[in-house]
Length: 306
Image (cartoon, rainbow, N blue to C red):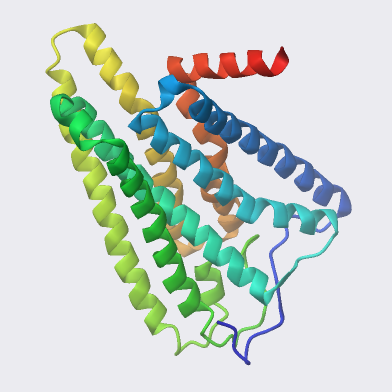
């Protein structure tokens, strides 16, 4: 993966130049990171310890929390350390590792959200067949497929990106290493293969998005046919958290990568929106309207405090 024309070190974009603002950035990111660790950690522990939550929906939620923990742990600690020690350096292998893990986890999360849409579709539109289709073995295979596909996607992009010689300096215009910013440093005539992979990935992502949209069109059509208001409310409550998480994930990602060049001055803020905010807010979104999660968390806190 390393090549002789690459630099031994790369330099990330800092949030501030003055010491006071660097420490402020460290404090803010520390608070966000601890909130993400606490929220996702509580979800994982609650689902693992409460037998009532040993269902397909909560099994996938546990996987989502694991991916969120990994995603935010890939970018935030390094940025915090750089601010604390007043440096912007990251080793070339460290940058490659950061790109790989971020792509792996963020891709696996998107595929998992697609599977979760299928789970909600079966639960509401095919309730009589739900137990047969979504058995424990099938759920494990689906989750493994999401993780495995994310791994393959990250391996292809990382290996290809870091096989391209860097000719435009060694300063990454972002607070963490990501493929688009690395490509800006590459030789202008050597990134066509990565562009081809990006097109394939874009088509796959668009296919997943269409699948989610079609699933929710059928879900909402089925929900509106439920005669009782209580039944409709229960069905909507099952879907709203997942739909909110998907909307947050897709909207921030699309804005980050499809925004016009005139908004390049807000790249840093946008990167925080799609890489830091979703992993922090996802546990809150899922626990806010979910009584089963709330009860499991209350029991967990009581056990810890006793």
